[in-house]
Amino acid sequence: IKYGTVGGAGEQTDASGALMVPTGTATQCTGARPIVLYGHGTNITKRYNLAEIADSTNPANGESVLLAAMYAAQGYIVVAPNYAGYDSSSLSYHPYVNADQQSKDMIDALAAAKSALPAGKASAKLFVTGYSQGGFVAMATQRALQLADTPVTASAPMSGPYALAAYLDAIFYGNVALGSTAFAPLTTNSFQKSYGNIYTTPADIYEANYATGIESLVPGDYDFTTVYSSGKLPQTALFSSTAPTAPAGLPAIVQGTLTAATAPFTTGAATDALFNAGFGTSNLINNNARLSYLLDAMTNPDGAVPLTALPLPATAPASPLRIAAKKNDLRLGWMGPSTPTLLCGGSADPTVFFKVNTELMAGIWPAQVANRLVTVLDVDSDPGTPGVTNPFYAAKAGFAQQKAALIASAGANAATAVTTAYHGSLVPPFCNAAARGFFSQFLAAPV
Image 1 (tube, rainbow, N blue to C red):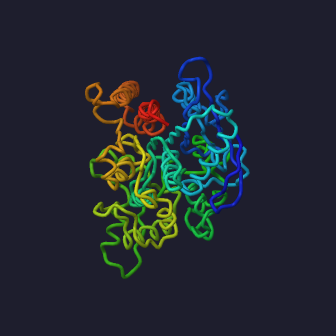
Image 2 (cartoon, rainbow, N blue to C red):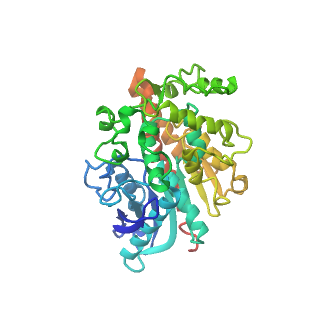
Image 3 (spheres, rainbow, N blue to C red):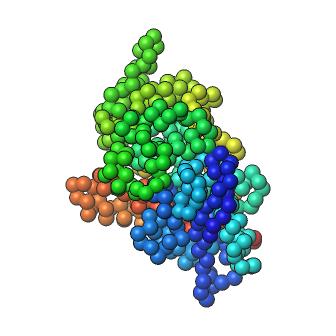
């Protein structure tokens, strides 16, 4: 499908997406079918197209096949936008994690899909889900639909950076997520195009050897392998291994904090190796930009990072990047879900941290969790015993088996293999299976 939508600054543009319609004579494929509105995960290749399910060379192929098998083949109509800035979209950038734009993109895709479907093909049941970036997009869309009084049957955001301001603060404090060097230009480009005040020139944020051309680098021609092998981005070194220097006259604790937030980390925690890899001498973000960000984070702290007493975004951030992150933080703008919601992820996720996103969101919605309107699923937890009181046993057991198989096959490189595969390939199939199971309980209920 192709449809009209808007860019990050409200400009008119277009986008494309996939519309998957179940066919056949099986009971679950006939009659009016429920819709799954799906947000895809982060990708840096512009030709990403979920509709190219038969093209194994398209970077969307794996996710497209998963959607077809997990949802369309089980009787769900799937609406999956590629997002503005991808595939045939005329937008010159992608409004990455811009909650307002991305929710409008999803809703515009849904409207286009409904207009393309034969009358009576779609039921009134609407399920909203997505993974990684798409988890964020799914929750933003759920919020937008809820505020517009548009019925959502149930939702299942998966492994998304929902608490965006807290997540970025955690990264700048040295907890560098795997994939951060690709996420950084997507985020800053998006916010610069949307708000116009993140920087004067890219060199304000990036080291000189990466600044030139970075505004048009992603999404573009490169994939996650070639963008690193070509030297366009460093693979893991987001920050300098030399700590920023605090301005003269500030208390010694400021320099102490800056030093403590810079590798090497030797705490003995399992995350030491991951976070240490985020620092180096050929780093992406310059120390001036990091210093400016951290000074604001110390002065105007997020309630969840590094503390957790009042887990809401900073009241008055001054850094343009932190202001933009707060604007798109899904802790704000609503009172939480009013329809059944499953938050799925893996607690050891090295890319989108579970604690500062999934657990944090559940923590600010205690009433919804208490009455089971919001359910949190950690697929990387003890599967327990199968039975009606453990509806996600299969997802947790399947994840455990797949993880064990990966560890066994990787041998001495097991830890690295698990870290590398965790977010992108280990968690998605099991969270999607859990989401489908979660949705199925609402199919027989009245429309």
